[in-house]
Structures are given as structure tokens and as C-alpha cells.
Image (cartoon, rainbow, N blue to C red):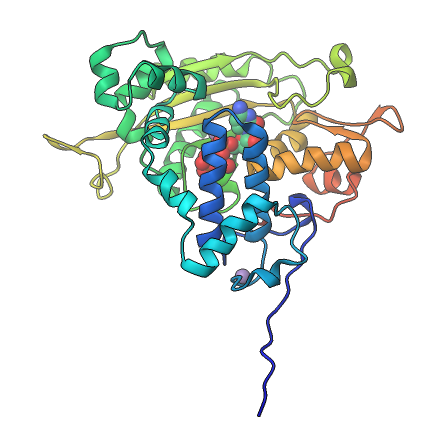
Length: 372
Ligand code: CTP
Ligand code: MN
Ligand code: MN
Ligand code: MN
């Protein structure tokens, strides 16, 4: 008896912000390969290629089942020739020769190690590699001048490259809440970034802070930082002051990806609680009583809170796609501060993420489904 084998053909909308992407990825082998190519492009300063691979990976992350054949991908967007070749190799032989060669490449390994230092970007890493510096040991020995962030990054390299767990994120949250409550009673602290999307680990912990009374949040960051410092919680911090003025800048200077809130990049000295200080915290002298954790703090006025919340929850690709959708499909300009409608020549107000999705003509996607 002849049986036709049924193979599902997948299709999914083309913008990541139109899709629900949970952490339950059925195509991790494929998306890991594409993400590695994206990472390599970004580390080589080829941002356009990086975005193309990120989009391809994100489209596969949204599929409900594992892909087994190339013919299933007819309705899947964002797959260019290069991505399709990699997918084909992985489906046929379990691996892509290009990706495996990349994994082994000295340059890629060196770029990963060096940009793994907090404060070291692609350009600095590339320059060091040009000078023959490929490892942390060579960096320490040859001693190029390091700035304050890089010195902290090198000093705490192991801690900062060890994933932060949810329990540690909660411990950081308790500290930030104590700090905020002490310097500005009534201040509200919200966990954002990957942990808000439901991730079990992160490379840092991100917080958005506001106050229900507009204006009370002004100048909060320096006070917060000085409280944290006085209590011994900071190993490093760099604070940027708020430079966003809606009236002065307006839509003429739209959606710069760098938002202009009061924000602080920091490294916390987090006490390790008894019972979970073990893993990786050891040195010669046994478990240490603390570990270094990267923490990002952002302060927003309550009038911009929904935009800040949406803009800082991520994922990075989801955010990029939201802005692209706003611009290309809606003739609007979305930032972490505001939404400007070019057709109506006015700002659209919102006090919740749901309202922003509605303004954008998009179905609401909750944080746990923004893992594009
Ligand atoms: N972000 C930003 N500007 C930056 C850095 C980050 O707007 N200079 C935003 C990103 O777009 C993202 C959020 O801040 O929405 C969190 O970024 P990040 O902490 O880098 O990533 P996570 O998604 O939290 O992932 P991880 O778990 O690795 O921290
Ligand atoms: Mn599923
Ligand atoms: Mn984060
Ligand atoms: Mn962050």
C-alpha cells in the first residue's frame, strides 16, 4: 500500500514583532549555527550581514516543530541564499562546514575572548588582534593602556562570563529596591531585559526605575548610585545623565537606538548566600563570599514608562523589528521614549505596552513571547 508521507510546510509572518517566539526553540541546532554566523559578522563590523543572519535565525525560532527538510521552508521569510545553504548542510549532514571552521578559527576565538571583557568593543578587539594579542594572558603581559571599564572587566573576567541565575537576579533586585526605597520613597523598580522575558539566566540584570509622580524621578540616578556605593555594592559604575527633550529634538532626530535616559552601567559586588556560593566561585582559598554581576539601571519619567518598558525588555532583534515595522509599515517613529506618527504629525501617548502595540496596529505580544 502506497503511503504519501506528510511533511508540514511552515509559514510565518515576516516581522519578528508579528510572531510569538517563546524560549521553547524546536530548531536550536539550526538557529545556533545561524547565530554563530551572525555573531561573527557583528564581531567583524559587518552589521548588515549580522542582522540578516539574526532575522533568519529568528524566523526558525518561531516554528512550532523541528524542520527536517528544506522543502518545508517555502513560507518562512528572511532566509537568504547563504542561510539556506547553511540550513541545507545541517539538515543533510548534521553540521555546516562553514560554521565548524568558524568555531575553530583563531581569529573568531580571539574576538570572542577579547570582546568578552566588559568595556572592550569590536574595534578595540580588532586592533589588539592586529597587534598579535589573542588571549587574556597576552593582553595582561603586553599591557596596552586599558580604561577604567576594561580594567574592571579584566579583573572580574571569570565572574562576568559566568551566567547570572534567577536567584542571583532576585538578590540584585532586593538590593536595588532597598536603594531606591531609601533615596526616593515610592520609587518603583521593574525587572526588564531577558529575565522579564522568562529566561533562566542572563549576562546581566536590567532594571527600570520610575516614580508615579512625574518629575520626582529627576536626578534619582546619582543618589541611587551613591547609596549603592556607600553600602559597598559597587565594583564599577558609569552613569549617563538624561539628555532627552521631546520638544527640542522631536521627530527630526528620530529613534536613535541609543536612548537618552538617566542610565548606569555597573558591576555589582553581590554577596553569595550560604548554600549557593559554590559553583565557580572558588579560587585557591575556597568559595568567595561574593561574586561580580553586571547590572544595568535605567530611570524613566512615568509619562514615558510604557515606552521604556517595551524598549528595554528586548530581545534586541524584537526591538529592532518593532522599530522597522513602525517606520516601514506605519510611517511612525518608535523609540524607548515615545511614538511619533508622521501622518498625524503628533506623538501618540500610551500608559501600557498593550496601548503601544495597538497604536502600531499589532497584536499584543507578551514579554515571554518576545524571545526572537
Ligand atoms: N539595550 C538598549 N541599549 C543598549 C543596550 C541594551 O536599548 N545600549 C536594550 C536592548 O535592546 C534590550 C535590553 O536593553 O532590549 C536588554 O539588553 P541586554 O541586557 O543586552 O540583553 P538581554 O535581552 O537582557 O539578554 P541577556 O540575558 O544576555 O542580558
Ligand atoms: Mn512549542
Ligand atoms: Mn540583560
Ligand atoms: Mn543589559
